[in-house]
Length: 245
Image (cartoon, rainbow, N blue to C red; front, side):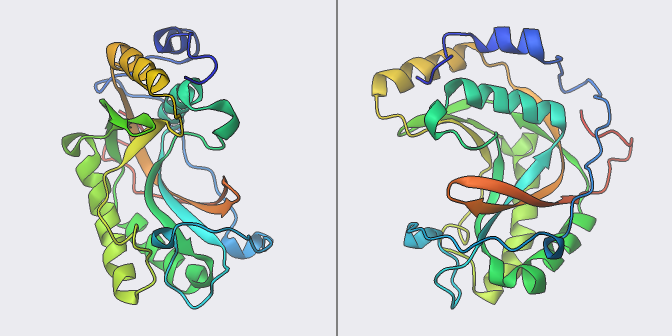
C-alpha cells in the first residue's frame, strides 16, 4: 500500500473537507475561463510506445494525444483526489482523481473536428449529480464505481453523443470505440497482492460514498504520463442554479 495509508480516510475527510450528502447544496464554484488551444504554445512531439489499442487512427504516427474527462465541482474533486493520494503509489502518481470519457484524441484534428463537437455537446448538456459509490477490485489495485442510476447513465449519454460523431470519422482508438463505465481509479500498479487486499478491505469498510456535480468537460494534453489542462467546457446550470448537490 502507498505511503500514508495508515492514516484513515475518515480522519482526512473530518479534518480537511466539509461534509456533503445528496441532499445538501454546496456553494457555487464556477468553472474559470481557460485559453483556447490556439493560445497555448505548441508542445514538443512526444516519443512514446503506447499499446496499439490506445492509439488514435490517423495518418500521423507521432502526434500529441488528448484526454477528455468529466469536470466536477471543486469540493468533490478534492475529496476524491485526497483518497487517491492516500493509496496510489506515490512515485507513480502523476494525476489527480478523474473520470475519463476518451483516452486518446488526436491533436491533428483538435481544431477542425474535436473541439467544435465538444462545444456543441457541452452547450446542450445540463449539469448532473454523480456519486462515487462503491469500491471494486482491479488486478493491481481498486477503483470507486459510479452507478448508472447515480450519474453513470448521464455520463454514458455524453460519451455516446461524442462517440457517435467521432466513430463515423474513423479516428478513435480501439479503446475509445468501446463502452464507457466511468470510475475513479484509487490504487493501481501495485504488484503485492497483500497490499492491494489490505487497502481494498480498509476502504470498503470505511468508504461511505461522495456526491458531486459534473459541471462540464476538461480537455488535457498527455505529456509523458502527466496531463496538462488545455480547456474546460461548461454545461448548462441546473434549474435551481446550484453547481453541486
